[in-house]
Amino acid sequence: MSSNNLVLKGDYIHMHCCAHILNLIMSNGLKEIDNFVLRIRVAVKYIRPSPSRFMNFKKCVERQNIKYTDHICLDVETRRNSTYLMLDATLKHKNTFDQLEFHDTK
Image (cartoon, rainbow, N blue to C red; front, side, top):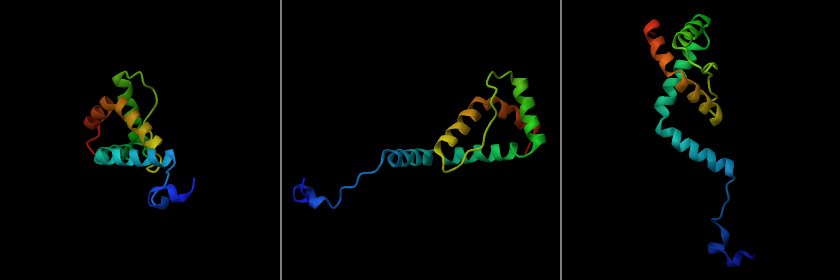
């Protein structure tokens, strides 16, 4: 196909790869809930590095009798799949975070 048959000689035709388009969609969608993701990320960063805080979290999990046994993980901000995993785990531990709030006022 010659470029003469294209609109504006094909100057404005550009194909993005599927991964790039998906990343743009995810970035745009996460902007809508960015404040919530940031607050969850801060909560996970508060719990994970401290052994005593993490043990308090695990005790709260045991008190809740949650069937989901995996623990919360911190995401890598540039990896959308890790953000999903962090949000999924924290959602399953929502009641644990509520209970932890009573035991740790920070």
